[in-house]
Image 1 (cartoon, rainbow over the protein chains, first blue to last red):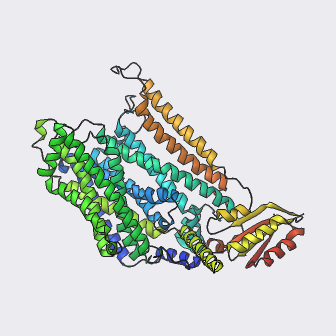
Image 2: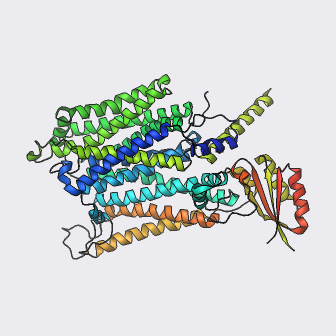
Image 3: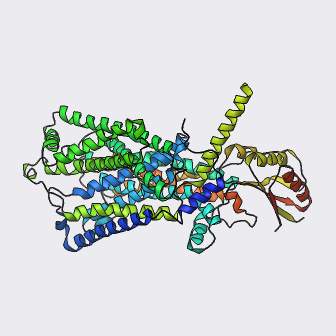
Length: 455
Length: 175
């Protein structure tokens, strides 16, 4: 059986390899960073233009009031679930193969949420009106509507973002201490010294660390599920055809895990090359992530089919009309593409030799996320263009370049934050990889002893 | 009597574990077993077991934080809704419990997470100034045992550490 990691890697080498990633990545790192910066610049330019001229430039108007902004918001919220899956769910399941890759997945969670938050602001147009979603009374002494899923959304995302940042930071403290001990001067030394909080790895610290990490992980799992269920409630609790579906919350959660896992594959491949992490982000681990993604893809496909079936057989004529319009109307190419990317492309992951074929998996992971982004767009826009009122039916509004620019820019913003994080903080958890190596070498030794005893 | 701090570094957990076991079983005048601290690059519950019952009390902070968060959350929402008792609600309850549960739940988690982390800092004694008997090798691959002893016990303790193949022994006169 292939090993997830070599048991004989020296612990000092683990420190050395990971700390080296903070200093000398491959040149591709800088190319990615520059491209991300340029993409972010495009998005920023579009936002400045929209802010100055008005929402008209986004081609957002009745009935299309949300457009790509809210579709992309859901996409980024979904992306954030991968970190929780890898660090919390798999932590509770004692799946130790997650250890070399969970840190960057957690960082993904944080930065995806930060990207998602931008779209809430952007789609308001008047940015300052964001405070109406904050639970305190406004100047007329009226409170926000606590029964609205939109307010739940604001609270849930705030809770998830702040908890994720805390989880990421707390889990990183022992590694920050390693960085503090091994980097001898400059701003990094000061930063790591400050953030390591004087960690020395005492039994008292480890004991409390273990309980804290486990507890926060236990909180994060129901939190992640609630966040995307609430995002689903933004739709499901309305009366709009195509949205008023009971299965939306689990469907959204499955979609979130799916796109998150696909993004983990993409970033796994990039980080493995850029930071020379071939010894830690190994092919057997990639195979496990691919299999996990495939399983979630099938769950998503099942829930997707359930949604179609329940609309089709429910005799809800308006919802049925939206479904037919998706498959045959102006959105048809995107809807079919979504189904193809989301349900057919992952079948490639069943083939064993493809599971560790890096170019193939890189392309597949990108296609899966294209499918998942299209899914969110296909949830938002077709319903607006085929609502209960006939006047909406001829209002197919193609998103303007400003909208596309901001979607494009969000990928730049996310990549920029993520790549800067990986250069400043250890993107592989050193102490957890050491634990993995230690426990595996111990198990190997015990097996050898048992075999000797048997003879 | 003046106190001394001794830090011994070991190559692996087995040697450190044996040294701890011997320190625990022997009666050395001027040495209290509770003053022994193990420092390691990874968490190791089994070896920590050799140290005996040492509690982690973070869970009490968690309980307090989660309950306080939930209660505060619900009070805020219900209080705000209750302020509008004179509004026409069309027969609906002034304080509707099912939708309020969602925000109560979020605040329950928020309080739980924040106070758990606060509890971690309190219980783990962080932030702290690093002790002068700290070796960066502990964050790499060695296991450190730090003890606080009276002058009279220094020789015996050092002998036990040496017997269990300590790689390096550092000593600091007490404060």
